[in-house]
Amino acid sequence: MKLNINGQIIDKHAVWWDEEINKVKLIDQTKIPFVVEILTCNTYRDTADAIKNMNIRGAPAIGAAAAYGFVQAIWEFWGDKDYESKLKYAYKTLLAARPTAIDLKNGLDYIQSFFPIDPENALKKAKRLADEIAAEGKKIGQIGKELIHDEMNILTHCHTGALALVDFGSAIAPIIAAWEDGKQFHVYVDETRPRIQGRMTAWELYQYKINHTVICDSVSGYLMSKGKIDMVILGADRVVQNGDIANKIGTYNIAVLAKHHQVPFYTAFPKSTYDPRTKSGKDIKIETRSNEEITHVIGYSSEEKRLTRIELYGSGSKFYNPAFDVTPADLITGYITPYGILTSSQELKTFFQPRTE
Ligand code: MRU
Image 1 (tube, rainbow, N blue to C red):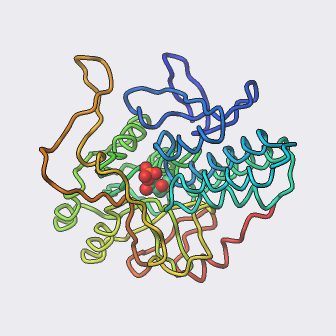
Image 2: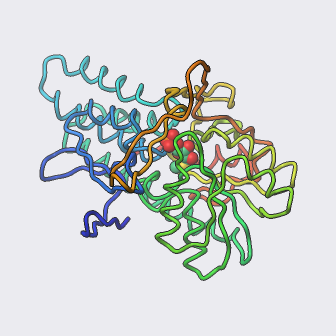
């Protein structure tokens, strides 16, 4: 993706390995859209922290970051007499950074499947994984764009753009591809509280000049009741055996509303998001994040010309902040994947085979 950093245009993935300094670099997503900055992760611990603190976010992007982080650990401990135990600890640290998106575990397991592997070759594998995820995003775009027609109103939730998927995006990819084909439509962007990932989606759609409107998360039911939404496309953080998905909190509300109003509901994702080992959505661990994400908001102060954090509540209340929810398969019209638009858990199982190279 092309990004403007202080007037300089760079063409980068969401996360990459800087050959010159042998370190992991990523676009700091905590500051977008106000400031575009690159964060350097010197060690695997820094990379784990960047995932945990959401400097990098979006399921496939954190999968790629975890793979690179694991390579950093291999590099650091290669030749060490406690190599195995140190690597095991690194795996655990990276895995614990975020629990819901299976891409993270899939990224680590992919690198681990080649053990014993030297640092240079491990790095080649991590790069390959990142490149493949990006290529799958492009394919999702080409496949999913066929669902989009002139005059449509599409609802999307959370952030599924290039930064969330290494490059090209998942749910956003068909929207961009259809727009580039000249189709004329409109996108409703859910704000996506509490972390307001909708502002990243809005920022990305704006770069392509795609016609869009940001709405509060509670507005979609009203719009559907007025016949103003023709289709929902969003991403996934984990897709399990029976076809249930975990995605950003609020996805389930949208799916129930969509079913009630007979609005088609699609989820788009690459191979790294598929979890064949987990049977149903009930078995997915849902991440609960800090209450500060509800009680405080980070925004840009134009007076002070910097990011600032303000408090939204008085004292005395309890808060609860689950970051994801589960949408059962029977509410999902189709899965937009690099293998086509699939409609059943059996098709998912057939097409999503583990990576072996
Ligand atoms: O908590 P985040 O910002 O990592 O959550 C991102 C999402 O939930 C996205 O919808 C998702 O990862 C799916 S598509 C890239």
